Amino acid sequence: MSEDDRRRFEHAVVPHLQDAYALARWLAGSASDAEDIVQEACLRAYRGIGNFRGDNPRAWMMAIVRNTAFTWLKKHRDPVLVSIESAEQFGAEEAYGVADPATPETALIDRTDAARLQAAIAALPPLFREILVLRELQGFDYRAIGEITGVPIGTVMSRLARARRQLMRTIGADKT
Image 1 (cartoon, rainbow, N blue to C red):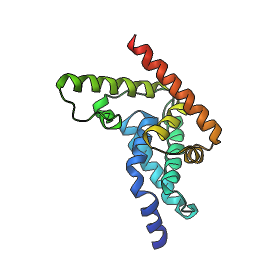
Image 2: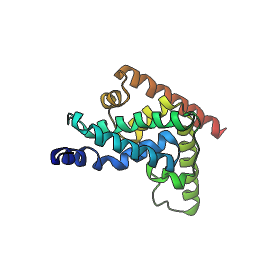
Image 3: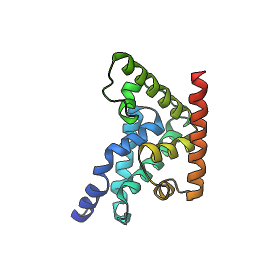
Image 4: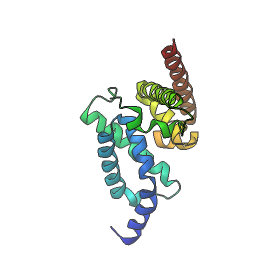
């Protein structure tokens, strides 16, 4: 690898490793599987850095992680089966804004709500879950999500709307 390619890799991949891990963890449902997926994605990015055009390194890396995750899951297990880890281990408190509650009771309620939300997201079909995670947790716009997933913007919007509806139904059903 040339010095220029190494610098491009450091610019395009290294700053986005935390986001790559978060996406892989949501898609795989497991910390150890996510680590394997990100490692494989980094190898793919390293080998393909010469093809990187430079326009959106974060989206480029997330696309590699997404494709690697689905390939890895297909090879190692059924992608529909997702293990649910505890909300604390998963980092759901940070993802859903649970921060420094006023009382222990509030903290317990917040953790329970975060765990319920995390479980509801994990229960979504993989195509809906990935769109929801990319938009709501990773903050990508519709165009970038379309580039990452390889689908038109209309499909992104449709899947996101369906994921949100299903999420609301699941959470609403849990409260009854």
